[in-house]
Length: 206
Image (cartoon, rainbow, N blue to C red; front, side):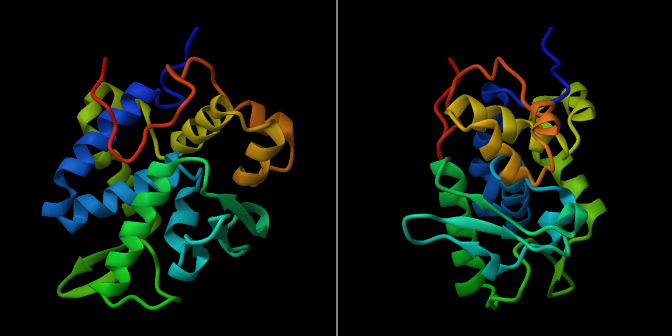
């Protein structure tokens, strides 16, 4: 039986992305929520790791774009790298956001990726605020699904879709920072609807 509370299927990911992309240009807050959604579902980051991510931790150019999780934020104080070339949509959204942070908001390499504007100042988000914004980001799925989907289910979503795309259990384990494949296997769920993650501008639902 499908455990619908554990991850987002492709149709749901597309609904969220369509909603956020439609509204992001009118609000930097919505754009921030989009990036949080991408980092959770497209990169498998934990809430704490999203908070600690810095501009210089993102290598978005070249043949092998990657995201670096610093050991001080990774579970067990372990650093790791997450490949970003497996989903074009996630990579393009991160590129556009970093360009905005640097060129418009004046971000420096050591500044956080995810920030919020308060009183004219840009402030890094705390874990509880990131988790709250995740809930806001997926609001279009309806109250029942919002209540079922914590930000941690973003890691389950990443694992399931990456596996459907062709990643091995070892690939997913390394990207998630797990110590064992047995742990990783509990994050992988079938029936994602399609073996592909949505692109930057998702198609209409069938």
